[in-house]
Length: 431
Image 1 (cartoon, one colour):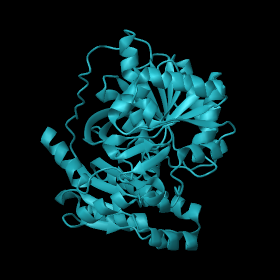
Image 2 (image 1 turned 180 degrees about the vertical axis):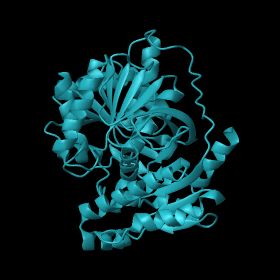
Image 3 (image 1 turned 30 degrees about the vertical axis):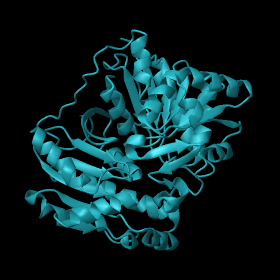
Image 4 (image 1 turned 180 degrees about the horizontal axis):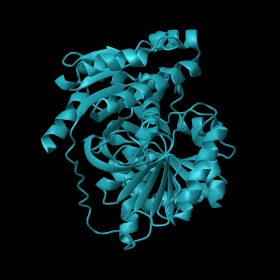
């Protein structure tokens, strides 16, 4: 079977979220970490997801990475392309969503696409072009004070227009609820009016299925992982994808210890950290000390004494006020880079110490960790919570890995209060 869908994700947790959605809807999916060199003999896959770490780097660099990934996916013969970003539209006014979107359009020789970050399963909805997190506007949610991508405007038509050269239109809820044909007509009208992108409203998963059907002929579709819900069915209707959607993922038996690394400062992750601290050993990485002391060695020494007792938690998650204080002292970019470097070193040390089940919270942290571990390709395991599966390394340079390394790369905002402990409970149940 030919490769059907070629996907580019702007962070690692988002990539596994997207791969999880595709697997649940019957697409055999392989995930690559970083821009791959596609082998002559492609893996058996209906979809390939390329995970980039490009959400917060300079827009020019993000564009180059996305173009390189697109070149590889085109060489692999993908029939349609998907650009995946966060369900909270994580970006600054300069990008990187808009610049990458336009660069991909140019590379594909196309002049029009769509954008929809909605993920109703995780309480992200779009209405009249405004993004809601639960009952709050994005600009009133915890994302307002995100240390890297503070989101202070919930009107995504306005946000995206500031990032792009072309104009942005809206396919509003009253059109979406009338079905795929009504959406197609509205898209055609917006394209005829000269818009290069249409922002799509969506309140429920059924709306995302409608939108997916309406976008079956677009070379490029963009959005959160929810926007991919309806795409597999398009290929199925054309006879290109098996009618079976029984893509139950399994976990291999994995000997070794368990740990959590939490770098996200989102409200959800801070709650999850507080929950796990009540029952398991926890070590806080002090961001103020990152510039001088060997914090990684101290954390690893602490962890090695406790790993035999069960999962341990190592975290740098902090409140917005604490983050602001650290950034004022170290600088915004320096503070983020130092935290990622330390947590990545800790991850390497944990794996060397025998950890084979590792939960990582935060998109930037996850990117740093998988890069440090040399992970290259992954297959998708069972879902822990909406948008977060266990993933199993298919190839890596992990030292001394006599058994597969199982990872859960969690976006900072995802998961219930007991996510960390639930992840390991699920693993134990399946063994």
